[in-house]
Image (cartoon, rainbow, N blue to C red):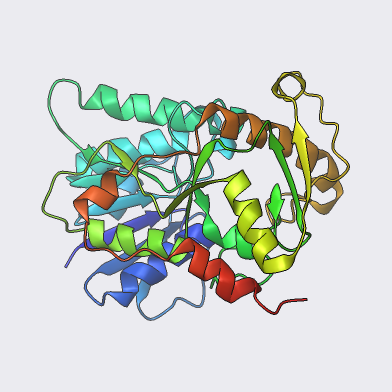
Length: 313
């Protein structure tokens, strides 16, 4: 049994991962939270913390074998919370640490993800002379569940339309849309993390998880087979790089983290950054955890989408 401490454990992805850990009935879960949680689940211990109080963090991490971070990186100014969490983990004798990643490769170019790269460098720095804290960057690409919006079968992860939308039968991409991209079901991410907790092999620093490696062009072909013709808009790379999005439709970000009045502007900015990231290959994550867990049965992307969309209006 591993005592697992989850920082930022009340968000959608974190809760999916916690469910995956609890499903094994092998581990103890402690959730660190900035606010009081009155109705604690019987299988989870909630601990209120101040991430600026390093001594208190050390006490909260005593006895933990693994710390998983889901701290919202772009809201962690100067990465103070995560760096203090890392320092506390080392002092408390924690064996393994997973920083707040859960998306792209490192050095993605996303302004909102810049803190991820800084935290990775911090982990490299503290381990440069000797290994004091084993770590992995869990990088699953895009959640497959987004392609099932609004019919996704997730327990906690909120989904939304993206630039290939089976709901709207539309797609926007750069050029021919053949750039490789990885999609992984959130339930598979949760199960992989649960299996990693006590895995006997050293954790790989880059921890790619590949559910389905495909392209937007291939997704459109499957979507048309399931849903009929799509309206496809191919944008010139140069225009997107310059911030010019001449598209007749922009998928709306309907996410709790984005206030309703900001969603239209945020959606346009996000789409441009997302398309550029696809073109740069940063969503084409590695398969390090696939290799460490060769017997794991990933959700088959095509089958999942067929079951979701066949006979839908």
